Image 1 (tube, helix red, strand yellow):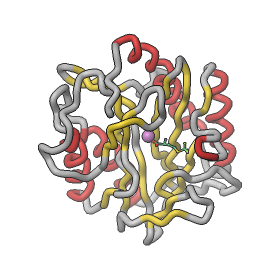
Image 2 (cartoon, rainbow, N blue to C red):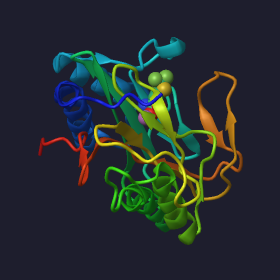
Image 3 (cartoon, rainbow, N blue to C red):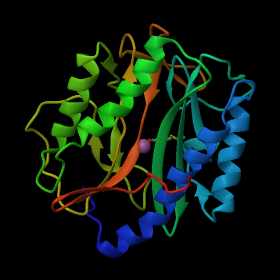
Image 4 (tube, rainbow, N blue to C red):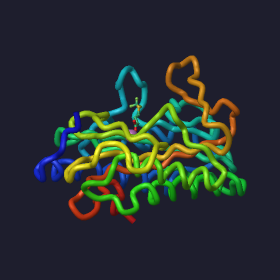
Length: 251
Ligand code: MF3
Ligand code: CO
């Protein structure tokens, strides 16, 4: 069941959402070759705690960190460890913060130094998929119009969309209804109501969309080990459009 938020609830969601948006700006200014993914996680943990929020991922079904840090062939849920970031890597950082009784969820993919043309395009197209997906979104839009537009843009650029992970509703729980896939048929799915808060999160692969989960039970890698990228924002559907809550404002 989709829990449509009241204006009061949306007000409470602004803070956790802006914290994750700003946190990823903060991370983007600091992430560089030579850092370990664990050091990225520490930046995230410290930032979220200093903002008076809690890192929602830490302990979520036993997840051992505050951030998911997914390098190159890792699609999502990369567990921070001693892996050292190298020039040419692309790194997605996905974080969720809890404050005021609500969660905010956001992900970005960063390029470490100079990366290949293919990776550069993958990162760019993945963000574009987000913006294309929500083009024209407003109350009454069929949910899978978003999915369809994301898929069209990804496949139109020669990439594939990950099938086994999706966007989702968010609120008092990190994952609420509806599920927001990155593939689907235009004109289908529930018609979104004003006040619905969802995470739209294209996860796009350079090669196959098939993924394999590693024995740690979390780390999802592409079956062909080619790169994948991820871009996510939390947004609220409005009568006449939408409002993105996780863009952040910090310079
Ligand atoms: N941010 C992820 C999402 O969008 C959730 C991370 S899974 C966790 O669904 F276990 F790390 F929390
Ligand atoms: Co999410």
